[in-house]
Image (cartoon, rainbow, N blue to C red):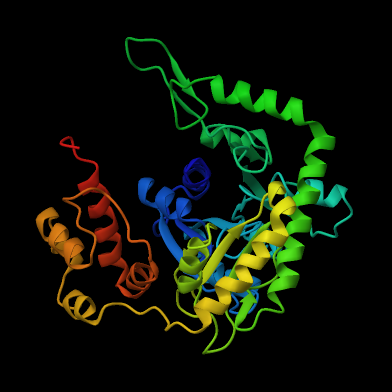
Length: 389
């Protein structure tokens, strides 16, 4: 959010009287938080496809988008790694294109920012991705992930103080005290920051190296094992500790069904819908603690894949899809949404729950038009968060 706001403010200061609206360039694999930032701060989007094999953004696509946008381009976003597939975008190559055009690059290192530096210290050969890369103006790191700190202690780093000034809010033209906010929040607790400091001091650099080593070894063990599971494949090349599993071939293991068969064995893996040329996948966030249980996990994965392999691929309910084609998402109200959710098997008027086997729901989410599924998801949460509960 703050990275988008900073870029927009810097763009306004640079462009003066623009010929159009500020536009952010980002791959379809960028985290949805950037879409949220664009909506909050009234920034247009130019969403780019990614290479269907590597799942990374192509620098030439970024260059073409920036050339087309001209002075409307306010920010380019890349990921290290992307959440969905765990792969690293080519940061240096993208920045080399954006920098001469005067467009800042933001690196979303919310997951990799605490893992990749320690991987480099352990001898892994990694490309430069951080503020050392010319053209990278900001970088985000979530300490509540692999730094094991509580939520609320994320970092947004800037290449220089001048650019960072666009992040600040200051106001004194009122009868109260002068206000200066360095983040989106005004009043905030120092508790998460103090806890993050304490955790980082307690674990220490040596401790983090050991934790990253264990997490990466577990990741490599899973990637190696999946290569020998019939009908299942790893998407792209996992750069750190995230893995995406997809069906290998048209008759391969359906990741949605795999998530259900793994759940039946007491393991949770996250189903992710397919978008465009990108397949539906099952997401794994591998932790240091996974290493001690990786053999048990892999035994369960092999057995779950065997079960899923003989089950039909999850598909959306035909009746619901036929009804969806007749609906204008912009005209939906809460009663209509409630009726749709009930029809889909998610009665929002009862006790909030999801079915034990969610593959059909995942297939429905994947198949519905974007506007309708977003409205239904929001409607579901609106329904379950009611005072009468």
